[in-house]
Length: 150
Ligand code: HEC
Ligand code: HEC
Image (cartoon, rainbow, N blue to C red; front, side, top):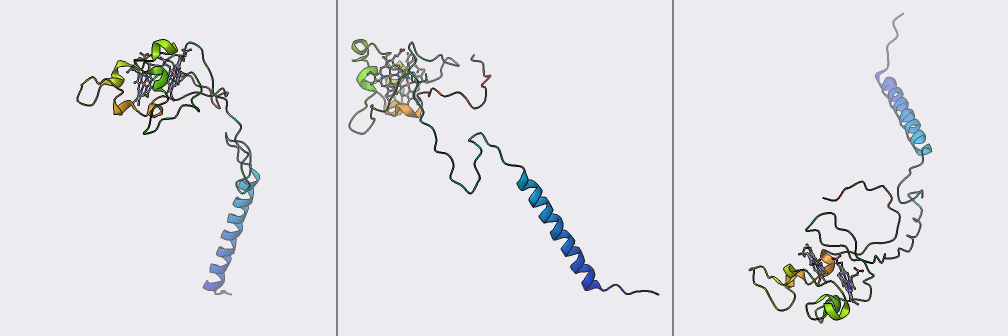
């Protein structure tokens, strides 16, 4: 005998099957733990405190990767403030001070303003040194860097 399929029942059944399948998918992916470069901590727990990073002091400076690269800073900088009142970096790197401090002089480009004029004091375009120059830490890189300088 022909049995009438109840449309409502069929719909309910397919919904149930779909939900069961979704739950199975969710459980199986939860079983694979997420590994990230910052460590293996659950998303809902606090991440491990970042380790202390020591700034590297590199005698003789850090090799540049290309000719016009702003050179990396080979020393600590936490004591040198840059504010409206003064620029701590220029105590050693200025035209006036560099010889006495045995520090490399800022590039000549640092005295040129946007109109191409050479100024007596550092150009405002170069005032915030850390915009372009950064110190390096002593950490081991998370991934190997195979970049070759040009
Ligand atoms: C107490 C003096 C002093 C102060 C202040 C100072 N530096 Fe230096 N800096 C040096 C000396 C000395 C070197 C050279 C180190 C070496 O080559 O061994 C150097 C090197 C550098 C270099 C590398 C230059 C190159 O050609 O490789 C950069 C960039 C630099 N400093 C930026 C800064 C910045 C930015 C600040 C401020 C946040 C600063 N310095 C503050 C003394 C100083
Ligand atoms: C807008 C980016 C920028 C800013 C800001 C900047 N620099 Fe530079 N710096 C460079 C670049 C690019 C070079 C390399 C080319 C050159 O000499 O112009 C350089 C070179 C240098 C050098 C090496 C010069 C040499 O002849 O080897 C020193 C030292 C330096 N900068 C210090 C400083 C200090 C100190 C400040 C802040 C007062 C500063 N820079 C601000 C981009 C910048």
